[in-house]
Length: 155
Length: 179
View 1 (spheres, each protein chain N blue to C red):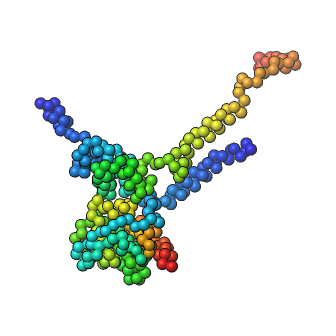
View 2 (view 1 turned 60 degrees about the vertical axis):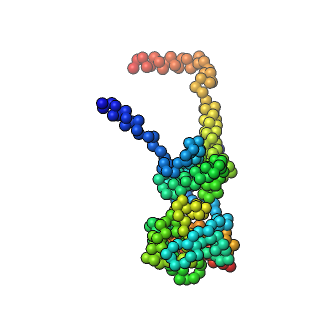
View 3 (view 1 turned 135 degrees about the horizontal axis):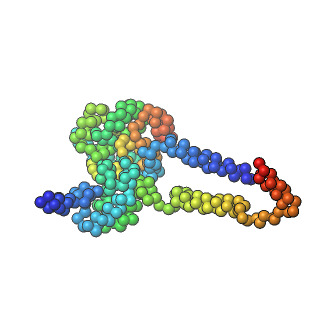
């Protein structure tokens, strides 16, 4: 009985929806398109949430307008451009690759190259332990060594 | 040469510190507007019923004179804070202020102006989903735009217009545009 109740409850639990059901487009394909786009657009109020995730009024307004435009047959890029024209690249959670964002995109790779280069130079310069063959002891050195070792034995 | 190499970490730290220092003084709420030096968006906002006028606010109203466009709402707390200062600006007669009652119940919007005073020349209403506010790139209320004689947006002030912001930033821009 308990199991049945649990199963029924689980079946009834719909997946959490980001958008208010009343905002959603009837056509699931268009709704998916709008949701995917909404996830890439930053909420201007909470700033680290997408407009799909945010509860802010402004995010709701933007969700509605995005859906209106999608429903009218605009492409994802056209709607994205509409929002960027008003809020700038800042509104895109995934910043575009262009002059002003060059450091942002290429900076980490440049640092990696510098680091690998530095490591390469460092390890090449440092003399390896086995690199230079040690010259055999001369007769004089051998004699001194023996003397020292004898000293050691005695003490 | 080798010695200089030892200074490298210090240099890297210095550069990072500069970035962080700059980051400390930036306000993440102040997103630079892309609408600066662009014409005021096309709009034809209906008047605020209960205000005693039926002019509304349209794009053409913003041509011919330097003006301010102030985004407000009766729900907006910071607007209450800036409002007395807008009244003062109105008294000086330096620049007309137009209001956009954003995402508001028009009845409340009119009541609010009766209670706190009405500094506006014209008021237009922009109910949810606030299309005109979005055309202006508004991120919250209050926001104030300076529009020049040709109807081009020249400056956007985010947050309440404080005496300091008025004296140091907005007024000099208005004076410059009025030349």
